[in-house]
Image 1: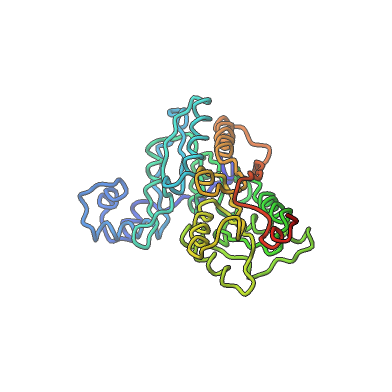
Image 2 (image 1 turned 90 degrees about the horizontal axis):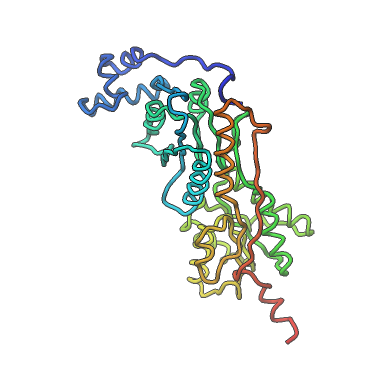
Length: 354
């Protein structure tokens, strides 16, 4: 487990080494590290590039005993309802545990072509007793830093497969993909497409694998042209739906691997004058509030985001108390929520006796 008690990471460069690399004095390099404003922009640029190049991280004032009631939650973004569900779950569990939570957004933001360094430095000042990461892409250096300074942490819905021993909480994404596809197969659909998120994301590949497994179990081969990737963004999903509709034999149903992307699919269908579910059925994933607000209401796979976040906080508390979780990966179940966006394919309805 990458946490207290694991192998030590070699100490990084000193501030003197950074100053020499940047061609400045140690006091000037110290001003940049500590966020002082009285440094020329060009000098700040040189020092910051040296900090990043050498992998320097300010030594923490971390002392969990001094701030046992404070944990950090780092989220990818605060601009969507998904993050709201995670925040709600963490807040409830933190209240029960008597903890305060500091929320940071955008761990991997960049300034120019360089990742920002500010979050790790702020963590050292706050002295948080532990950290939750939601959809954050940690670099090897960041994992090593947390490990070296013995700061317990848990990943919520990790983007990539975590290093061995890292504790994480996620959803049964593969089973969710199976459930969505089986639902459409049971309605009589044979031409079922999938619009997935980022190719490299663990949850996305698992959902597509579930889709393929359900088709195979039903004796139906998946068509390569029916598998599209949209990067989890609504506008890109809209474009991918247009591509599917332009195929010689377009699908009669589509499994969209997030509710946000499903909104883009709805837009594309409306632009083509097609109706959901009369002309094409749509299944989403997440069960965000938007799934109930759209017309028709979206059939989707419920991902228990709040429960995932609360479970992660409880695991973190145990780690802060020196316990070692029995397993490193906790998966919570998903379930299909049927609404009005799915129906039998048009041909089956027209052939049905009246």
